[in-house]
Length: 415
Image (cartoon, rainbow, N blue to C red):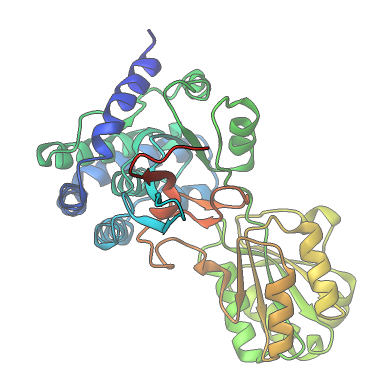
């Protein structure tokens, strides 16, 4: 039996016990986990420093380095997110619906854990904390396989977690991390269908496609974030400026950052000079269509590939559109069903946009950067699901569960 299979077998054995330990133990363990993150900053920073040095030596880009780096603020967010998860209602055992049949049978649909979840992820070591906390709260055993670039950070965080939760009564094997960075281990994990109920990839397009194409286990897909901000002809232009800027610049390396700015031709002459200057002053490279370049000379010409690219960097594609019809059509062609935003004071335009745009999250007068489990009050997220089966959008504790029917009767027989 291989090391990966032993880990999976251990998780499979822990899952039924974890599903029944109750909210009190889970919440105490989560609070202990949060406290441990704050108390162990030095160990986390030391491990992260090793990863950052190796990443820089390997020529990893600035955007990827930002994802990898752990700061005091990120550790505070990790701990706060775990505490928020602890304070959420326990989803396990919740009766979603219940009714009585004419023959006297009581039918209840009850929320239960998925079982064992495998997570394959890249770059961000805070995913180790988020995933462990969400799985613990939702009663799922979890096997974590992080990327090689964050291996030291991930191992340090996983050790802190298990040292904190094991004395409280969480079953051994409930939270495990694969220590090898060999890609063969990840591929073997994708074939462990007898032990793993669900596989979740978090990372770049290449990783996600590899998992989707090679896994024998059901996959919840976290797709690209080619997100758009559409500034409508009826927009408050100051609000539009702030949203368009924030959606790109606040953190360009994440999946909910905007990649394309669509601007109605009715306000383009007034809006583009202002927003383009502000973006340029912030170091953003703007790749624009012909109409936008006629209004703001000197912008780089956009290519067809730019409309379909998730830059994850300080690069913005810019297009002037005739109005909401063309904006919706463009998003339908190039969007990845992640997050789309409209800025408008026109109620009808807002309703059309939210009704006709197909995405996991659709915003009116809000920055795309808010598609996030933490910002949605879920404490944290397992990822942003861009598919439509089982879960969509930020995956919190409820999305990490399924349900079963519990039927109670008094000897009913089917005639």
